[in-house]
Length: 203
Image 1 (cartoon, rainbow, N blue to C red):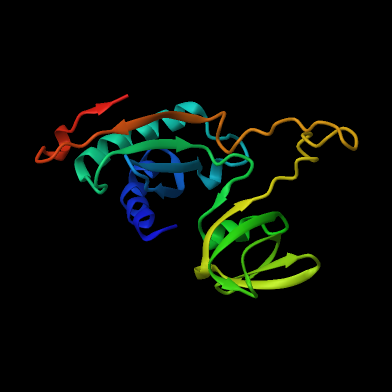
Image 2: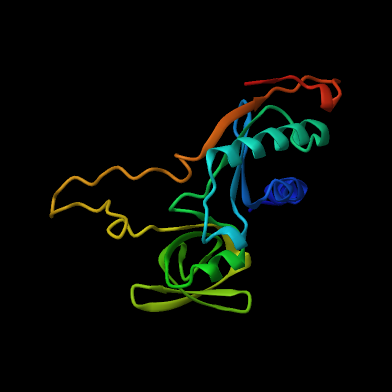
């Protein structure tokens, strides 16, 4: 995550935790006209075997986080708040996330090029200290976690029943991460010299 996303995540994590779910990470995407703040949440570890994040979880987090952002005011300018489940192609924000999915495929974008590349896709083979060892095209490649800008799992579409039924067949369109479980986006518009707690928020 970027420094800005980390700051916002540290601010909001206790609020999300208090609602009985875990804040996996945040994407902060600045753009002309307003940024997007996207939160990814998951059930807490003790519940992962029995339930998944649902739309009610996303909506509850959206309400509480929206109110907190109004008061704390960590974002300059207009922004859109989104709260989503991680989906099958879940983003990986922490070293522990990579450790949890050893044996699965992932794609990552690196901050600095390594071996002439900034992007790679391979199997997460193991964790060595602060490094992640990927198997890429049959060869191992060690990447420092601190050099990863962003990472995401690559789903096994065949195992999910979404691969083509025969060569040249049409693939079913996979749902994007969190599509089925995402709270409606909320837009915040800021006005100069107005106290943060009273800033209007239009749905």
